[in-house]
Amino acid sequence: MNARKLCWLDIREAGEARAAVLDEAVHQRIDGIVSDDPADLGGLPPTVRKILLYDGPTAEAPETPDLSAADIVILPSGLTGRRALEERHPAVQFGRRVEIVDAPSLEEACDAAHTEPWSLLDFRDPTKIPLEIVIAAAVGAEGSIVTRADDAVEAQIVFGVLELGSDGVMMPGRAVGDATALKRATEAATGELELVELEITATTHIGIGERACVDTCAYLREDEGILVGSYSKGMILCVSETHPLPYMPTRPFRVNAGAIHSYTVSAGGRTQYLSELHSGSKVLAVDVKGRTRIVPVGRVKIEKRPLISVDAVAGNGREVNLILQDDWHVRVLGPGGAVLNSTELKPGDRVLGHLPTADRHVGYPIDEFCREQ
Image (cartoon, rainbow, N blue to C red; front, side, top):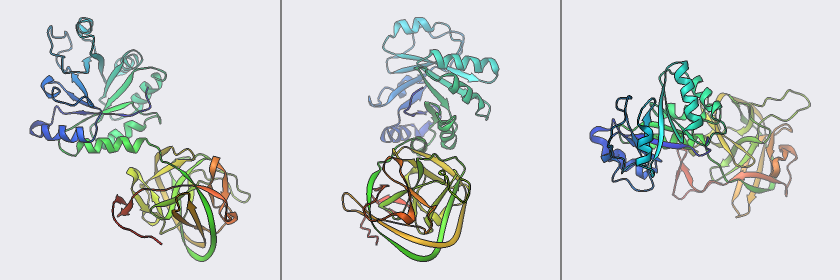
């Protein structure tokens, strides 16, 4: 099992759009192109893995196949003559394709995950439990598991199975846009953000306003929360209610995030207002080391509460503002995972934040003049 997620685009169904699909795949830095025709792989740049999928009869391999254009050759399970192919083509990596339809084929998939450098798995039933079994069985193995997905939505699910996820996904590239969608599914499943230390410069009690509690469908860790800020180019890491409180039980799924106008980061790096979040939305959970994961929102509670405005500044002089509920139990995270009560923040205190590099238009980064104050 590997940490980096792989994107393989299967162009066998691209038809007349094949050239355009390939151009987009190269532009999006797709890891591998899959075809059953060596001619499709010949002109690809060296930055892309060329994967030849032998999808013919499973009884016997062809005696003189053309493998010169391939980096990886995936052979069907049960194929005879594989050893002879490997001996004739020592520069090519070989893997096994397993179609999982029952218990014996699932056992074979687990064996492939343990013994093959490349295992291409095709689960015919919609349940992800067989994939969970293979991933669990493959922990510690050196090879890579690539799972077939029908579309980008399924790809994102596959990347997150058992939190580890499949090492890679093979998805059909039938039209322009498919490569981009697959790449976004990968980026949504992994990634890190650069966190910086911010110095508190002032706090001000500003009166009554609406604030939002974001209740996620996940247990957040003690060093994990979501990024929130009044400005799109500067946010502070708000911790979830995982730490003990004297008058109420902990709620590890909840972040008391701030005033409704505030920005947070959602899937794909897009910003959204807290007021826009709803059941089924997705937000980016971030820990104190900058590691991220996408978590779904179960509910957003918007209520009138006293508010406190927190001003901070980054080392490069960028100003950051966060407006929170004016109550001791609302907290943010500082360096090393220190938990800081919002009402006790004072000038000179240091908190963790993130400084996006681009301004935003309808939540997307854009290079234009924008002043926030």
